[in-house]
Length: 66
Image: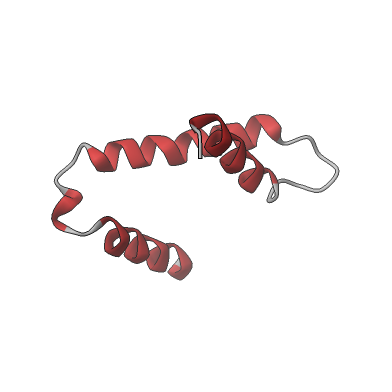
């Protein structure tokens, strides 16, 4: 998947959760940018004591608990 294809995929995923009948593309783009920034921040930390998959599965579980 090219970077452009991934960008479109992420924005579309967030856009699916915007209020119906509302053009939420700006907000979806902001959410996608936050997600990418979080991944970039993760890469640049010591969080690699986890495997990538293990860490993100735990993050997902914690989000679901909120």
